[in-house]
Length: 395
Image 1 (cartoon, rainbow, N blue to C red):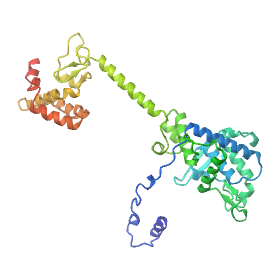
Image 2 (tube, one colour):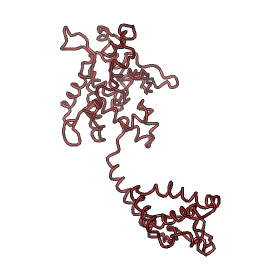
Image 3 (cartoon, rainbow, N blue to C red):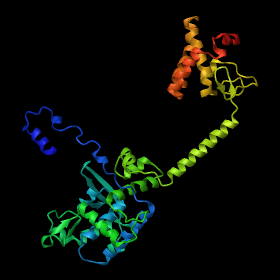
Image 4 (cartoon, one colour):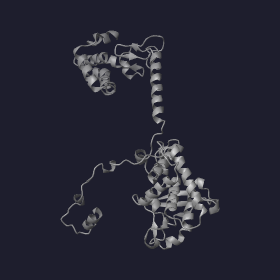
């Protein structure tokens, strides 16, 4: 309906519409795509069982020489999907001339598929054998499977309305045994038949396995991600989608990811505790110092560092929650000192310290906690920082 109305608008049949966006709201059905969640990828045991079933069915197909029926054609399409990871619609719409010679390698050919939504042509390199009888079903050689469909169903395709469509079979239920083409509804019915014919096709919970092209594509994407060593660019390239799409809809963490993450957290906590035990932080008039004798700006001659103002540019400077009252007492002391000190001198010595405390240190703690401590420090100063007298005595 939207396409029809847009065509009417473009041809001037809707003169009362000034803006085509007025024809439809931006999103008439928000979150409609979230009502039903897609199936998850196959686990490795499930995927192995599915491969075994497909190998068995392909062997049965090779034993015959008659035209392929709907079930056999569906099994061949499933085998191609396992090897290429293509979307279901491009596979169903494969033409009979989808194979073209490889421009560089004589033992390979190119599988050409077309994706309507993105209007993109995808190229997949395939390896070929010398003869069809040398086909190895265990490897699901896509080129040999396609050539098998072409040769066995050649006469059937000539009777179909689109003789160049690959997945055409002679239907036994349609009128006068007229040829038919595979569709998504038929695929679901044929894959249920596949599960019924192979009783070992069960999921990890022992229930009948749900087989569809989308699950195979997700499994393919996760397998490529695993083989690439976790490289998102490589995995997305071979899946013919963006990294964002792959991360949102395809990739899933492995089964042991949660256990490994928990173990990593335990190890990290242990390392932090051990490092805190080894690190003897020393208190300073402002906060703490990791090493007052050999730290970043320490004199490193055996004497302790006494440069209080240098703490704010020292890598050994440490501020914990317990030090915030003392730190903000110093903060208010330098703020009040601005009224009694030469403005130029105050800017040179103290303005950058105030900005560091506000923009860097305070941002590392809870905002409400910082606000409370800051107010308390203004009302009840730490004895050391009622004013900057102690700082000037040190100088």
